Length: 369
View 1: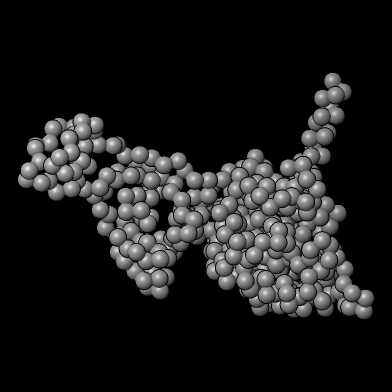
View 2: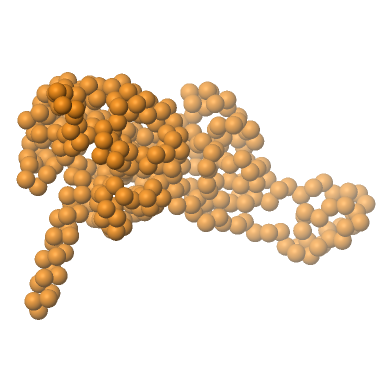
């Protein structure tokens, strides 16, 4: 068994091996015990990263078994002085003076599935790459449209409609949990994202709006986000309604990128149009300055939220990366936003507002009898 501190790799592509030499972690519910000792190839961390397929690169920290088969250890060598073993007696008893017990060998036991096992399955370890690829080579009239589910039920509806990826809105989730926008506790937000991820197929990437990161250090923020199963995130550059210093935010994004590697698609939100800029500062120029700094720090995409449609062509030309625009009920439709320069279109809590308006109309009709 490999004792590599970072990666354990099974020669069987369907089996992952944990630190515990008695446990095999398999994606197959019908997997059978594989003898007494699984065959495991030992790779150094560097060799593993170079030669191991991405879906088998399993960080051990926080590893949880989705389906774990407990394999009994091999019976100890029998002492010549020991009496013959009775049928059904335990092979674990040892020593000539110990009376052999008549209990049967424990059967294979099945561990309960962990809620965030999606992080370690073959399909979902690749969804960050899938999400990243969805942003590339888009035609101007075909932007990536990412609707925003606010709970598990709405996520299922959107996936059934055919959307290839989802982006949760923090305001929509806050409303569904009974909080005002920006006041959802971190634990509740991560739990809500977990339920959304769990509700959709593992091949569907989910990006989570985690506001400004809840004051968590970058490494902890990344760990908790990945535990939900999400493979992307929004991080905004304002706290308590005030813009964060651009270098400070760039440094934070760099820390997030370092902690996440390529496991997260990072969408850096630029709040210059919702928070304002200091007097005498050109709003568009400041937006471009921040966007460039965030891309240089490792952001995959930038999101100048509420930027006016007429500014999108200039922003798209100035920013070296994909541009996210928000579609509003009274603004241009998604296709037009794409033609103006947006690569990715999101809706904030807009879809939830439409759903609640429809529910209110239905309720009014019911009251009328």
